[in-house]
Image (cartoon, rainbow, N blue to C red; front, side, top):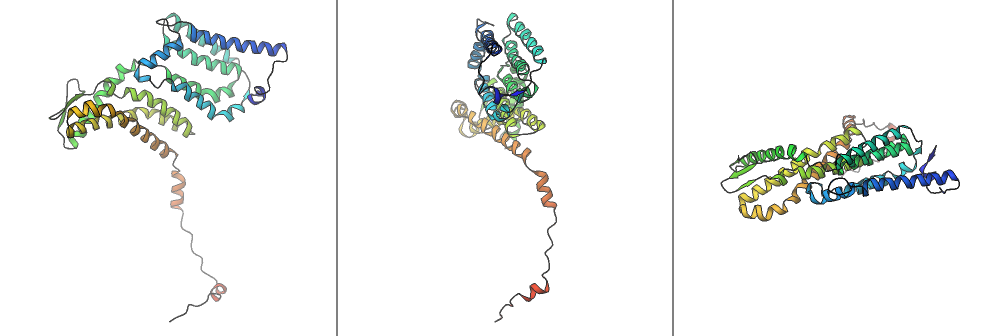
Length: 328
């Protein structure tokens, strides 16, 4: 077995076998480039171009270009662990590569770009196992899996977006009534009406857009700051309530501004700037959750329950050396 440290810095082709390995590596890179950057899948676009167009057109995934960069940042963060990995290729990687090629074939023939992108992640799994082994796969598993978050899942809008709109509208109405502002829901449950304002929680205000971005941020933040898997999962799964919390704060602030300053100012001016409320609220809550999970509760409790040390009584010799205080 060998490590990346011993291979990459000093590796030079010295024999026919070395040149064959170099040619094989170049061929693999060329084939991957041809498959995902050249071959057309859906509307005369390659897999890569389809992703780029989708990120630009679909606002829910405008953060998509940042995901490969964040995966690269994870590799840099784990660079010392990566250089120390012992390479030991396993045959199971070949089976994963075959599965990736089959999935890619289905994506191309069925014109399913999402399936094609998924096959790229599976391909990286296979190459890692086939060329590096299980130890390298363990180090690269999360950075590779993180790339799945760049796949647009717009079909979730229909199943998740509308229920979120109803929940935000209902909760906002309840809070307004609790504040003493008489409000009620209208229409399909997404309209918020009062004697002063009337507006509807539309699709962009459902929170689905922020949910997609927050899942990326919480996954990245959890992996960096937490060292136990269950804590990372807690942070990742907190993306949904955090997105709802941030969006609820935004809609509630719009309603309060409309109640005080009128609907025109709230919906035409403040609405466009209220998006800056959503992410600070959600990200602050995310950081607080991370800090609470890393707080040393056990150590603090043990120190709190530890009995105070008993003060020792000075000996007669120590008492004799004490100079008596002068009295007036």
